[in-house]
Image 1 (cartoon, one colour):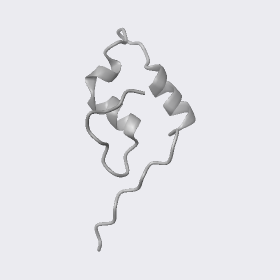
Image 2 (image 1 turned 30 degrees about the vertical axis):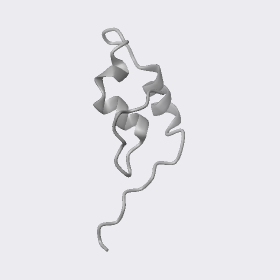
Image 3 (image 1 turned 30 degrees about the horizontal axis):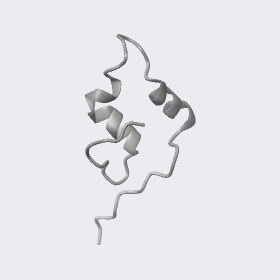
Length: 58
């Protein structure tokens, strides 16, 4: 996994966030080529618990 330069916000999966916002994550792929990490992530879900966003009510 490539480490994102920015931290993912609370409630977001760090891998999903990084792959959606960092063009370098998919730069090695050819046209119409699927990212193996993203495909695995979609099939198997998040590899760890994603922290929930903090409550803004209080």
